[in-house]
Image (cartoon, rainbow, N blue to C red):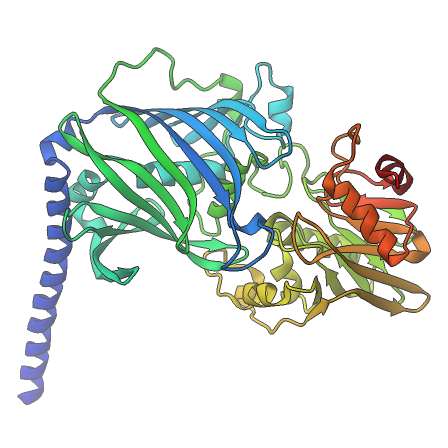
Length: 533
């Protein structure tokens, strides 16, 4: 009898508690709707046009790694968004100025999303897909990953988000208040499509203060990606945030300002049309796990995203990259935006750099073992910490490889290798293991049989702890970013060019050829001639 009473009381308590939780979530959303102008005002917002501007910053391409690093500006953009909520169609016209390069790049293009697929009209990247290059006028269908990323952020930014939450109460549940900068914010979780948003409310205004997702980042691991909302203004009876700042783990990434927001404007005919050829091969927005949200978002602003579901190469042009011999016992990847090199030693292999993503690293590991069978990869020499050249390093740690980095980078890579990464669910997350890291303060030599591989620390304003690798018997060096061959040498040397020559002169090294993190191998003599004395 006592047991039955306890079960009855427990059931009653659970029902009451569950009802209270559900009510609190419902109340938070209802109050937010009212604070935003009410259900009627939000409901009549069928179409919206937004003119604005933003600035993007990248923490993982800074001079120094880690939390104290100063972010590097990637781009500044002006945009015009036209959204039809009734048909779930959007067009975003971009005028972007990529400022990370010595000479700014201008990119004018449009993103069109309708019917679950996306299309880019114009040139949006320095790393174009084959479809884009062959199209006249230029354009290409979005990859499934990019379409998913864009749809997710449109959902997060939607002025109708609270109304959508209220109209789908089963998708909303209460969670514990979230503490941000020492302040507790009441919150709910909103599960829609394949996404989970944590919507935090300002206790005073009752409007959303920030909207969070948990994203997998190749360097930082599982990360809080927040859209911070501010500067709420009334548009057509509804309140719309005019200040939107994306933060990754509390650091600003994209700072956006809306200059003009218009409710229910007229839309031009054909605004959301996608060319027939592009529509025929377009991939619907991906809804699975492991989507590289951070890479897609940030490399897009950076101006050199390869819009492909394989991330590291254009899957519409090739099934996979190639591994080409560039010297006896030395091979380099081809067909990718960033390169790796593998060096055959007597009993093992050495790899230079782990760029882009795990997909690329898995391919490079497989291709290297096929090219040099029976030899394990023992060392990875990592040129520097920038994420486009280090994102795949975790895969090598999972492979049991020792990672060699420049002085000042060991702590950064140790954090990277120990971070949880359920968001990307990479191999190291699935099979954790302790990383073995060697930090080079000057020169480091690997010797196996008759062959040696050297790593030299050189001074560079591009990134601290930069390493140049060298294979003495092949007279072949490997350098990343501070000298690339994606374009001909300029009339006058860049600071990076001077850093390469000065660094090698310091160490008394004169390679005949150089392989590069970007571009094809080239004679070192031509760089020496350009730099002069």
